[in-house]
Amino acid sequence: MADVFDGILGQPRVRKFFRAVIASGRVTHAYLFTGPAGSNKTSAAYAFAQAIICKDKGCGTCDDCRRIMRHNHPDVHYYAPEGAQGYLIDQIRDIVADVSLAPIRASKKVYILDRVDLLGVSAANAFLKTLEEPTDQVVFILLGRTREAILPTIVSRCQVVPFRHIPATEAAGILSQHTGVSAQQARIAIEACDGSLTKAIRFAKSNERSEFRARVLDVLERLEVADGLDILDYARELIERSKAPLDNVKTKQAEELNDSAEFLTQTALKQIEARHKRALSAATSDSLRQMTAIIRSWLRDVMVVAGQSPDLVVNVDRQEGIEKAARRCDLARLVQALDEAYKTDEAIAYNVSPETCLDTLLFTISEVVYGSGSSH
Ligand SMILES: [Zn+2]
Image (cartoon, rainbow, N blue to C red; front, side, top):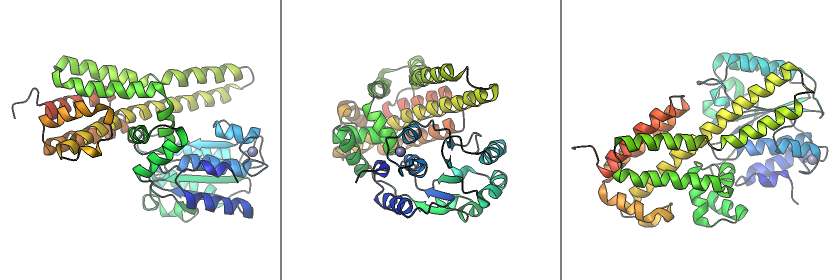
């Protein structure tokens, strides 16, 4: 029997749990999904929202189900931290105010709060009363990396649903089953998306993303003969390309605004614009993260070849360049480059200018891997 929970890939126990909850009709007011990035918590939250709101317990085909799937159901709200350090108190106040409003088209409202491990003490305090005194119209679904990273006052008010880590090889198997790409292509997509199956499915289906990946890898290979100015140019070009998929997002957003402009109040329009701005910045950082993930994946391939295990290479279509790089450097120095790549991820997450971060990373790789511009 197919249902909306089939889409929660790699999480059989979670699927079983949701089916039991929905069949019993006993949905409580607050759930906390815990699990590492890439364990499908977000898609599970939307599937659960479908089962809660749909009159047929998540048929997947009715208007409510389709709107939830497209993330534009007026009674299903998604929030992620807006501050560099986490949730802003104002953001939580907005959520609390919204909770007291009646649902617009369904009989219940669902609030999905991502990364509640980034809910600080004061923001959490502003939220506790709402979480504690639920109305039967509202279901909260909170998502966080680990139970330990979330404030105990939040955890104790929720039913905890643990998601398992999906090993890369298993994720690749699921991905190739669902998209028809080869096992090798699946591994590449999984690595580029840091293990996230949902993102990897989109990645594997997109020509634009595969061209993006090809260009990132071209640049890494060309670092062998690049001088300082070339490196700056490459960094600028890759940053530009990271922003390219945003054109799609922008077009869709402009359409949505056009469609609704004459019906909506100024306040509602402002809210849509704010949501669009958040979606754009999320798309930018996703794309930048894919770039550094592709770079890390290539560096790891160079490492496994340098460490005499060439059969572990993921980017098999780049074997030649990888072997060439592996002949030029040693393991210890590669570890240094990989470290720098992780630092780049962190810096970008903390809103350091991505251009600056990428310049540094490419210079490090050029020096560490190809030994250029250095005397040691
Ligand atoms: Zn439905």
